[in-house]
Length: 398
Image 1 (tube, rainbow, N blue to C red):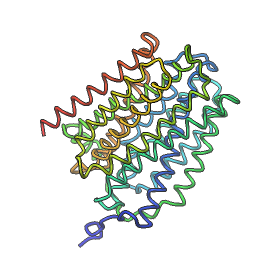
Image 2: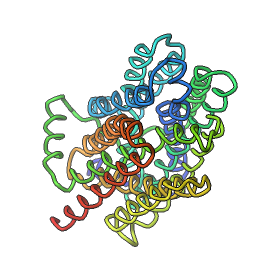
Image 3: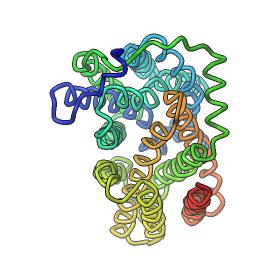
């Protein structure tokens, strides 16, 4: 009997399980704080660099595009050198680029750095889920994945809440630089806390084998629908947060960027919901929870059509909870549903997830310029409904 066949993973409640959770919390903070730190200060960035709203949003789309393009190559690296080593390389590279990005004198140079930063960050999301599946007892994988996703929401929230107030007091450059310093600290936590991997076995992976595996996954309708959930739902989610700040900065709200950034506290709803759905999978099933989460997301978006700030805030909280619930289900399912090449499957999910962020995060700008907030809401609701219908059709196909 080989070591691979008898390794069951660390059970929940053990010291290694807790160390893995803390280490991935650090990785999530380092990744998502940097990835989305410009989002809350897009109006300031647009004014300083003399670009419009849709062009300013490219500072987000550039990074998510780089991430989407790099997740499959990172899965190949991780199969060869190990999950922890690959994530360490990714975090250090991204943090160095994050410290350089704020000082780019031109918008075009900033976009180049953001693409490269996204390429480096691509070494975290897909690998982290595979790392969990190898190191954590299978009975607790769904809970651990939910915990990881909730950690990514904390990272995304921290990046926005740190950058915007500092940018209001100084400028957007010092705001994003402060976030890069936080990422450096979180990277150090990952280096110190992550336990030595026990479930990893080196694979003789090659570019051709990765592409063949990815091709098989893309022909599997049961996996394709999960990748589609990430593409459509993430696209709508990022578009919402990209342009809500522009809405609240304008009449009748006239909120300063630093105050408007407090709306990103709605991310805490995602921290709770992603953790919650992980615990409910065993009782209610993934499909039911996925569809319910999408319904919650749509309801929240419709509430944001109100002109009352308190109702907009409530809608944002509801929408965020629904999105992260759906994301926690779909991302974890993309790994467990694959019969082979789980690393490539989770990487493909992340590829389409961030491709959706890049595409619809940018296209939402045209909806905003042409039709205002109602146009953005219409686009997001249509994407969510399409995702739900696709999931229902795929379930009947099973």
